[in-house]
Length: 445
Ligand SMILES: CC(=O)N[C@H]1[C@@H](OP(=O)(O)OP(=O)(O)OC[C@H]2O[C@@H](n3ccc(=O)[nH]c3=O)[C@H](O)[C@@H]2O)O[C@H](CO)[C@@H](O)[C@@H]1O[C@H](C)C(=O)N[C@@H](C)C(=O)N[C@@H](CCC(=O)O)C(=O)O
Ligand SMILES: Nc1ncnc2c1ncn2[C@@H]1O[C@H](COP(=O)(O)OP(=O)(O)OP(=O)(O)O)[C@@H](O)[C@H]1O
Image (cartoon, rainbow, N blue to C red; front, side, top):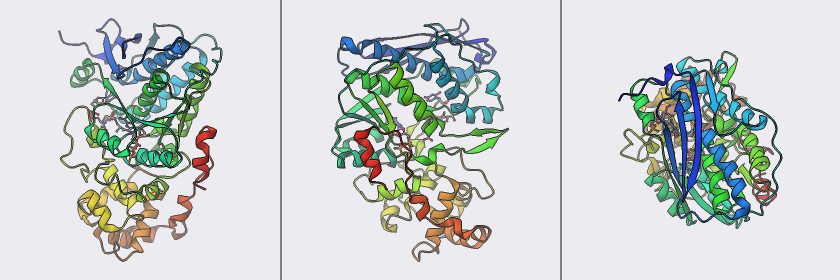
């Protein structure tokens, strides 16, 4: 029977979440339509110690509420029903912000005003939970790109006990994990197949805050396997909006930003375990400061990729690790170029993107020249302008087509004082790291 259009539904229902033998089942529905079941498998799951069961139930509940964003967005109905228990005010607030801002790009692209739609009902307050004595070790999420590999190397140097964790079945991420030399934890995730049927039938579709989903999956894993820290690699630049629209900041990377990190970290401490840390080791750093650190280590050159086309669940993946056409490829090439010898960079990408005239528009968008910053995980416009300016001063780069055109056309319109690399490489003091890991960030300064 064909599925009915979720855009015609009046309510989105969080039906239930259960867990048995390493598999979490997250169940949703539109009105009285079919149950949409997302499955998440935690390999070799241990028996849960009694004292962690309440914490696990809380983390699972949050995962259910956060992962619902993939399905909710297909219909955006006027009513949200949480059938497995009322939410307290703090939880509702966290979700309200996540659905509104995490779906900001989706709303902008589809010309929807979600402020009229998103309302998580709540009743009462939550009593803060105690510490659980979780083991002092870190789960490090790996995305296949440069950022998490920088984190891995910093943690290794600091002697931190760490496990490289990843969600999904990307062979590219698996290869990076092997290269880290850390123990690995691969969590599988299967979206409800009906979502793809809805998409084919023309449901609302667009970007979702996937880092929030991965974060909630890792919070469940931390309680299950026993880790006191979840250490993401979200940089300072992720908090900057992509564009402003109708008085609303639209940020493609909202759930990588500082605001979300702070609210999820506080929620986990008050609702799951007072000694569970959710943080980002690279928060004090700009994208350029991260690429400078990445350049120090060449062991990942032959395995990593930041090109998101590799990470599709459906649809074609590029034949090469770097498609060479997308904003991520453009940005990572440009941001690494000031810090890597040119032959090493060309070896990683297999080509010179800055000597290809057909790529100019892509680099213009990164520099916010006649375009807005792309909806992708790229650094701030000022970082791209500073990197391009630095290259224009170097004999090995300045003749390349995109750089030469920057000098002729873009540079005359820029304020030179704002093009220095050095100020952008300075770390900030802002981070949410626990004392054990804070020393690593202190050494950035
Ligand atoms: C890999 C990728 O970039 N995918 C985005 C793309 O989706 P596409 O249709 O090309 O391929 P699939 O990823 O296979 O998705 C198929 C459909 O499934 C939906 N979906 C997927 C995962 C999920 O968790 N929930 C879902 O609902 C998806 O919407 C497709 O309809 O375009 C989509 C529409 O704009 C994006 O939603 C896909 O983004 C993925 C969810 C994804 O993993 N993207 C990350 C690479 C990403 O964008 N990371 C951001 C972090 C943003 C944040 O705030 O967390 C970044 O690095 O900046
Ligand atoms: N499939 C995944 N499983 C677990 N964590 C992930 C996954 N994809 C991304 N992440 C994590 O989410 C955060 C944001 O991802 P992001 O793509 O910015 O990082 P990256 O892949 O390490 O680097 P790059 O910016 O070069 O792509 C990082 O901490 C990354 O490790």
